[in-house]
Length: 437
View 1 (spheres, rainbow, N blue to C red):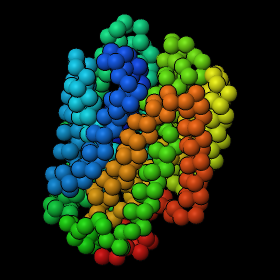
View 2: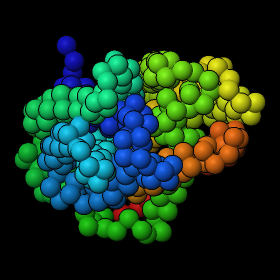
View 3: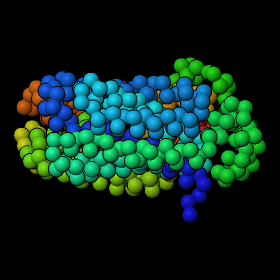
View 4: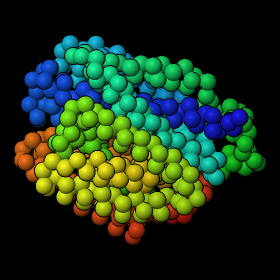
């Protein structure tokens, strides 16, 4: 039987499943939608990126309601927004309405990317925090895999297949809303709001020893619950989170996820095969994220990032070379290799690292900043990708050369500057970064 912290962490991590599903499901519908509403490559990029624009907004505003109303209430609202987005996108008959509901889904994704890992990191014992916070990423990749799978299964349903692809998300969204109602509020949020009597039994159920001393340590770590993030003493976690989030998207991961069938058509696959190949990518993503969960608390965050950087450089470079010569069906092998190394490193580490690098007093603001950076970069990459690949016969080559160079810089950044956080309490990380109350 699952322990109490594992059980509630997995429920909170279901928001990651919806995050991944909403992110990837558009890949099966984007070309049909382009034809349906006769969109140019620029407007098609905007339609796909409309969700990411919402994600940027959601990540930017998530910290305030999470801080004021609590993590649990925000997770419940996120579930309802996913429901609304799924129903609205599937039923839309007008392009503008479709974009609006995609935007709503994006807000849910952005908010979820901040609040989900935040909640998990605050309820997880230090020895399990990497794996439990990493379960959010595991659910993201599971959502991506299921989205690719349902896209493939629904692809033969005719001209309205895209509506089934987008509408099926109501099932996991409804389940998420039901299950979140059963979890407790974050004990750290309760303590920050002077609700010690409610926090104590939660910490006891989480298996913490010497609860009074831990509660005092949490209170001591907070200089002011209303403190601003943008102070010089927080410069290190700000720089680490922002740069790591930028590099996550400069790998090209979201362009690949959003436009997978289109990429495989460029590589010479027919339409049916172009819907099937992403399923293999999704399976690799899921498998190597599972492997990362086994090693993240053993090897540490930094070592995973270093290993992943080397692998991503190799396979992105091979993909670029494949597109340089035109159609090349080996692209599927190279992209699976890239996905494997991304999942084992950047994919598994980013939300764990951002959720634990900021002190208690500014964690909600720091999480919002890291997620905002991640999603603004995702919007830029995903909006421009179809424009670049359609503007030149070498567009695919140029795109993947750029991603390769960015991962070379990422390797240098991680090696030279990024700290290790494995096995340390959130308060200990704050102390080692030299952040004093």
